[in-house]
Every structure is written in structure tokens, then in C-alpha cells.
Length: 431
Ligand code: GDP
Ligand code: IMO
Ligand code: MG
Image (cartoon, rainbow, N blue to C red; front, top):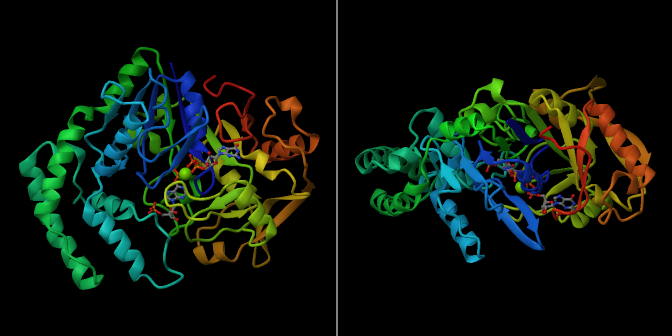
């Protein structure tokens, strides 16, 4: 029996989907525990590309159980679309392989409307660049205790009561404050009664299922979404998402105690990307940034937006090691760095002449960071066909060594391309 939590160490899109799919071979149960369909996790299996927003990235392995925990906010239409998408590609999923917590909160149409209208109403420079999926407003309702849970779908009278109260309040905000159209509760009610029928077979106690699996000696893999710097508490607030994205969230978001977590692994892209607004100390708005964006095909998996690109940030990495309690690192997209001549790694931040070794809390300070770089020579070789550490050019090995020295934890896997095979295994992260 073993449990492993996988989290992003940067601003999301580190390649968590690929790595979770890969590690599913060693797991029996795969659990999403926070976020919602703001996530976009890409898998390339036998040349076929899949992007999952809600369903755990273990789902392509037929004999594994996938769970969506209470910490998730779920848009039922997206859940159903993902199921239909899989079925249409010859991979139907039934409730014996996928369960959904009744304590997860529902993303309602008014959450999406508020997300869109709220962003539109914000002044330039204040917009967060959300994914527009209703994530923030849904978590907001959960915390102020107005939320509607998956369990409520199964109780039509309770669902109607909560829906009517909410729509009354939200319509006030939408029309009076945000200049947007009101929503009709009856239409929403009808739509969600259909969803209730579709979702019902999947609803189950995720905490109990995990506990049962552990008692039977099974391995459980927890799949984080977003990344450490998008965490509501530890990220570059307010330019963050509305959930805790760090490893500790696996406990609250799935219903498992911290003493049951064995290992935590961080996924770190060999450079940095960010999609949406907010400070990005090592951002490159030049030809090198364009190289990373183009060679790395850095477009958002959820919104299709062009991702901002920059050098690897050691301050961000060390923050992730500490906040998540990382035991090991996976370095992804190392192949993208080939052909750059020189490479920079940020080692510290200079803020108004003072050196900082961790991300400051004040957003104005974060915005004024001047990164201090260590420069090293790059390599030209194509890494995408390399399958062993010894194959890598010496300069790439040096780059990895610097990362390990900064993080003070070992690299356990190296990814050199989007497909399963394009991976260099150094150590089984479950062991
Ligand atoms: P996630 O949100 O962390 O799962 O990451 P995304 O799927 O949003 O973005 C990662 C992108 O990089 C996807 O298009 C992956 O197919 C791709 N990818 C993953 N690992 C590698 C790699 O090692 N090299 C290259 N070139 N692409 C990769
Ligand atoms: P994965 O799991 C990258 C970003 C959005 C925006 C901010 C808030 O694929 O790594 P939200 O819709 O959550 O309120 O948006 O967070 N964001 C992500 N960026 N990867 C993600 O997920 C993200 N999920 C949210 O772009 O800046
Ligand atoms: Mg993504």
C-alpha cells in the first residue's frame, strides 16, 4: 500500500496529465482533489491526444478506479461531455471505473455568468484572466455556505429551494451591478434534473473508497491541478485560482488524513509558463520567449490562449519544495530547451536592492522583482528520442544537476516529449 500526491510546482501546465497517466501503471486508484474544469491535462497515447478537464488522467487505463473528490467544483455538463467524448473514441466509461463525491460542489450557470461579467467589469490591469469556467464564484458560494452540492441534485425539493434562493441573489448582482442578463431558475432546474439522472450512478463516498483501497493494500495516486503559484494562499494573490493547489489539499479534498500520505512529487517544466494575468518574474518577451512558446507548443489546453514563457525560476521551485513537502521532482519538456545557445536559471530575486530567496507576499513587491540569473551553456542535440540519462548531452546533465542542487531533492523522471514513451525513468516514484 502506498500513496503518492502529484502537484504542479509553477503556474500550472507543467505536464501533470502526461505524468499521472504514466504513473497510473503503478497505481490502482487515481484521485482528483481540487479545482475543476479550469484544468486541462493533456495525454498523448499511441499517437492519440486526449485533454481531460475533470476526469482523472488515469482513465485511459481500463482496470483502474478514478475518483473525483469533494474538493472539486464540478460542471455537470463538462463531466457528461468528457464521458461522451471518451465513448465516441471507443473508450466508454461506466460507474465501476469512475466515482464522484456527493460533497463536491456544482458549478451553476450563474457562476459562469458571474465569472464572465465580473472579469468584463474589471479595469485593465485588474483582470485576472480567469478561464471563465465559473471556478471562483463557485468556491465563493461554497465558503459563504450558499453552495449546491452534488448530493443536492438527488433531492429535487432541496435542490429547487437552494436554486431559487441563489438565482434571486445572483440575478441582483448580474443585473444591478454587472450589467448582465438575468437567469431563469426554471430553465436551470430542468437542465439539472437531466444531469441528476446522468450523474446519479457515479455518486459515491470517495473518502470511504480510498480507505477501502488502502486497507486492501492498493496504491493511490492523487492528481493535482494548477500549480503552487496559483494556490489561493501560497500563490501570487490575487492572480491565482480559488482553491488550494498544494499537496496538503489532497487530504481535505479527498477525505484522507495526512498520516496516510507517503510521498509527494512535484512536476516542474524545464522553463516557466503562465497563462492568464499576473506577475511572472522570469518572463521573456523576446525571441527566446517565442522559441519556447513555439517549440513547446505553449497554448492553453483549456482556453487555447497563448502561454507566456520564461526562464526556469529557482525561487518558485524552492517555494514548491517547501510548501508541498516534495520528495522528488519530475522535469518535463527538457527537449524544448535544445538549440538555445545559452540558458538562464533564476537563483534569487532582487527587490529594491534586497535579495529574496522566496516569493514575497506583497503583490507590488512581486511585480517589481528583478531576477538574478545564473547563466550556463545550452545544447543543440534533439532530446526527443533519448530514453536513458546517459544518452543526454553533458550540458543537459549539468542543467539537471543545478536543478537538483537548488531543490535539494532528487529528480525521479525526465520527460522529453508529449507521449508516454518519451520519458527517462530514473526511479519509481511510488517506492
Ligand atoms: P498539465 O495541465 O500540467 O497536465 O499540462 P498541459 O497538458 O496543460 O500542458 C503540457 C503540454 O506539454 C501538453 O501539450 C503536453 O502534451 C505537452 N508535454 C508534456 N510533457 C512534454 C515534454 O516532455 N515535452 C514536450 N515537448 N511536450 C510535453
Ligand atoms: P492545469 O491543471 C494554468 C489560471 C488562469 C487564471 C487563474 C485563475 O491545466 O495546470 P480560474 O479560472 O481558475 O479562476 O483562473 O488561474 N489557471 C491555470 N493556468 N493551468 C491550469 O490548470 C489553470 N487553471 C487556472 O489562467 O490565470
Ligand atoms: Mg493544463
